[in-house]
Amino acid sequence: MSARFGQLLAEPHGHALRVLSATSNLHAQTLADAVARLAACLQTAGLTRVASRLDNGPDWLILDLALRLIDAVHVPLPTFFSDGQVLHALTSSGAQCVVTDAAAAAPPGTSGPLPALQQDALRCWRVAAIIERPVLPDATACITYTSGTTGRPKGVCLSADSLLTVAASLVDASAAIAPRRHLCLMPLSTLLENVAGLYATLLSGAQVALPSLAQIGYTGASGLDVPALLRCLHQYQPESVILVPQLLLALVSAAEHGVALPASLRYIAVGGGHIGPSLLARAAALELPVFEGYGLTECGSVVCLNRPGAVRAGSVGQPLAHAQVRIVDGELQVGGVQALGYLGEDAPPPGPVRTGDLGHVDPDGFVHITGRRKHVFITAFGRNVSPEWVESELLQHPLLAQAVVWGEAQADNVAVLWPRRPDSDDAALAKALSEVNAGLPDYARLARFVRADAPFNAREGLLTANGRPRRDAILARYQSAVDRSYRLPATVVSQGISP
Image 1 (cartoon, helix red, strand yellow):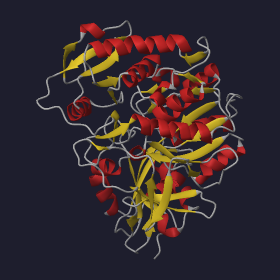
Image 2: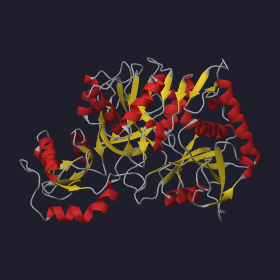
Image 3: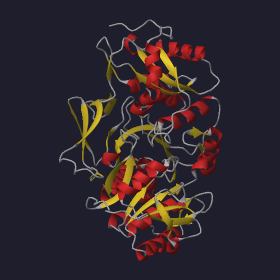
Image 4: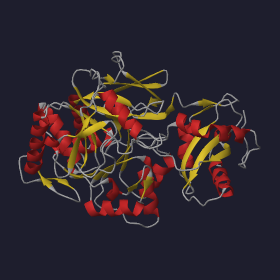
């Protein structure tokens, strides 16, 4: 283990409580002992490349730290991955085994359990023989999978020092508040929660609460039980949480309906997708301590963050201490911490990471994101439209749960929609779009829509791990319906799209 990772377990008082969960609470020395025992088992078994498919909880953390202790590679797999995606990840990473919860079925691509590593709560499965184990970049400590354009997730190799550098920057950025208890609400296989939730919290000496995904309120691949989420918040009384926009919207909507949120909350970091200005305004009206940020896997997670004493509405904050941001031809490029490369691809070229995100940096150093270069479409009238902006406005409407917008080379724009209430009829959806259109310039308005046949979810490859829409996959699913809508008169009453 690197000296820096050793700091995650360093605690001057061995009886200090570090980890809370529904099944067990771990003090500093208990956590360190559990990590050491598992590390010894892994090392004795000769395991240097280990995948996991675990629910949120102390076991996830103990396994991760045990692998760090012996300088092995961790390949955390999201629990929503399909069997095909799991098999692809195991093959492309060259993992020797998969660690699961004891009650889980054998993962695809495995050939039986490894008895030497069976524990009360865990089971370790041997991966079927791989003819040629892929060569990893030197210093690889973690392989995290991000959505690919073909539905096959791409493995990104990251070093331990990179992850700790980002975590240390986050500790510095939150020093004015110094939260003493963080509640992990996102899957731990998500790099954002892994680095900003686990590592930064442990590095600061604070407590981390690790309820299961079911206790948090996740149902299936994309559902959320909001009352369960609220119960979880009140049970653990966190001072800090990390939210994707969908979770923030759920909390804001609940608070607007009179539901009390824990008074303990002092730091709500939000990232993982575009956040509409109206949602941030609603959170501010409720006096919620929301701090928007920005990051990407290829840069080790968080790059920019609004922070106490340095907040600018409409921005994703200033760069963290480890990151250098510049704008080249309208695109954000980031220097500092960088991934070692993608699995199966050549090493990345030297120089900053080209993010593909469009934006600008204001005179005070706050970074503003305006869209994705590859997502911007040009209407038949030559207008450039960033779909993320239109979608963020749509999702502020109380009737609309999910929306993806297109209009490339068309005279008007179309949205694929999923309502919050499945029994909402098409007339209600058309009325909702008309209401949203009233606040949009004419070239960005929606003239027609396609009703999705089910919520977009990650299991079917329609959402990323952070809940962002996979546009190519969604368009492919609904291409015929979109094409058919353009052969019919407009279904949404609006002032139309003008050049």
